[in-house]
Image 1 (cartoon, helix red, strand yellow):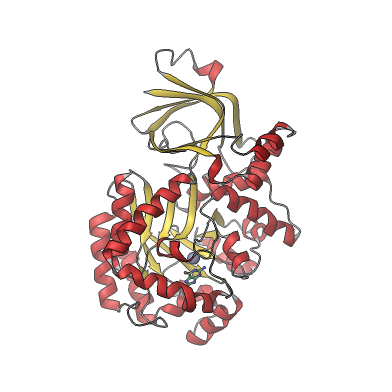
Image 2: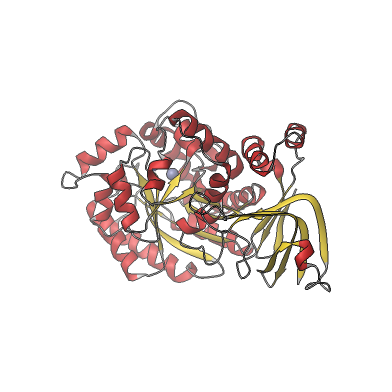
Length: 427
Ligand code: GUN
Ligand code: ZN
């Protein structure tokens, strides 16, 4: 058993619904044992009960839960910041060539080490990840995450049309790959498998039908895809699926919408579609840096929340431009500003932690530092940059400090990252 003394900030619920959801312990104590949180609260209240436990004094730092990235692409690390195109052209010009390189297992292994290092350096302790179409890309990523005891969910991209040769699969080949990956990796350590149809445009009816079958045959497996990101994508989807009533219906009719389904973007969805997602307890990943970078549009977060849809935050690297969830929250605020709807700082932190955990149906295990949760947490250095130190000294209370941290903070703030109680990154 060990303990950490610092300021501790986490959320016990959704702060937009519950005024008591924010838990802040200015002089706090976090006690962990065997990978889990044993106690978390005020130092003055807990110190007596854990008097014999070695305490590391991190006063002046903040401890928060690890961040949860609900949408990111592993094989796109080499094309972050590719100039000049919106979604469909960007996929053809930049993304597909980069993903083709992941046919080489050696390349996939090298990139997987970089990718997981980068997640941890930015304080991301759980991610829902797209692989490339190649089974080996997901195997490389799972192996890397397992070696760090990381809670990570991933899947091979399903794409049997509208992609270059070498980057497509077949219905039967994809089924065999998925069944093998699920048997070998799902539930191993803290890993999980996600059935991953890239998006409707890249999948035939037969492919989506098979995806729905694999999902139904493997309870506990996740589903991730893209939905309603870009106007041209929406038009082409309607042309490819003339029988569907709208974009979401393409996924609904193949049984792909459920409690463990995460839909990236949903920038152009209307209230009624959010309602259908909420009715199935499905989740949306809000990816502000990607939506701004590709010019996709402004996600209507308040509309999604009003309809009760679970929402998490996603970096969507490589259309997204950063691995930093802190920086992504700052950009989420700017998206809100462009819509005339300012994002509350505690709501932002919720999206990155407990909200993300709920989006992934993992809130019984991660998302905050309640006793019994897996001890995935961060030590944040609030003086990581001169400007941040100065700004926080001038701050007017907790909310203001948190807000400035999301706008000015990035990987430099993450002093340490712990996975299941073990330090896996130190700056
Ligand atoms: N839609 C289909 N594939 C992709 C992708 O790789 N990135 C984004 N942002 N949208 C997609
Ligand atoms: Zn994406």
